[in-house]
Image 1: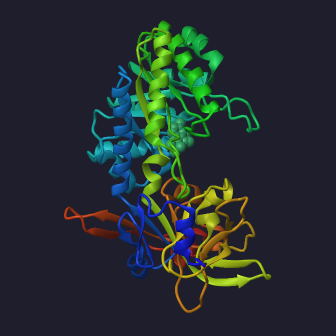
Image 2: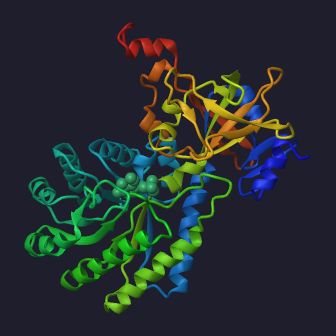
Length: 466
Ligand SMILES: Cc1ncc(COP(=O)(O)O)c(C=O)c1O
């Protein structure tokens, strides 16, 4: 009988696959043996593999280039990175190296952009898309960037923003408008709170923007919460949006760009079947078809992929500390960290990540639960809610068992809070950046050590701040 962990994986998935392979009894990821890194840096450990970011950007660009060519699409494509997915300097550095421009969502984002411009990391001819709800601070900073001569395209989220921008900006400026999509049927409300409703777009343009001396409408922005998916809902919303674009284009000659937002999904299981090339081909083809029916020129396309850009560069590693047997059936493998604080999406939105053991793949497997170290009963991980359990090599006190959660590079650090006070005072893990030297060899640099007890006591007001 085949009872080893490797047998289970080979029977269940097509393995080895993409960045995952086996070397002896250990998993390799992007050709990297993770065990020596764990032995050197310890667990819990956050790793970012920097080359992956550029690879993902090039993947999307090549899919769009192919689609544009195949469909004889007349517009161009431009990649923007949605900074909120991961603001850290090591990510933005990689993104800028790939000649990608940025999409911002708050006032402090603009401070970051200014610093990048001052340091020469961002080129003065870059385009900045400013999305999100804009308070006075964000408006003032957008205006400052415009005054500096930077090409900024604020994307109007609500009608009031136009007046506020008008008061703050003193020279001609391109703007965009965000369309408020209808939410997916299972949602509690019908229309997204983000953007301007379909029916209001044209009246708003006619009465407020068309004769404006300062603002020229450049783009329409569309993003749906559930992301890009091959579903009737997604195609329906895209079609509605492109039809509004076409109606508006007939009234607004300066409009020439459709921003399709973010939302390219990332792989959350070894069975992940999303075909990025096919979906991008379909999106480009459908936009072209609708524009042709309306006798409107194909718009230039912008995207703001966040998770897609950065998720796959991240892995979060834990050790199994101990196995608790709560009854005959339930075995809890306790990790040396917390799901709630380190991978908050697993707790908050039941998000799945690819979870695999790092070593002992030739050992027999068993069905377990995974428990985090906080004393919160919700601090556990289910890879599939309906199965309610996961499989790992059999626990043994005699040897170490390491566990990896892959594609954790987006949102987890900012949602969990980086270096702040965490639930049950569980420290933030050490964070290591991996890169390739010109000769292809792997380099590792510590970005942040594990959070210290002293730092927590400072934050809590027990010790003076440094
Ligand atoms: C306006 C906008 N653009 C882009 C993104 C990035 O989405 P994703 O990370 O799914 O690519 C988001 C995410 O919420 C967003 O709100």
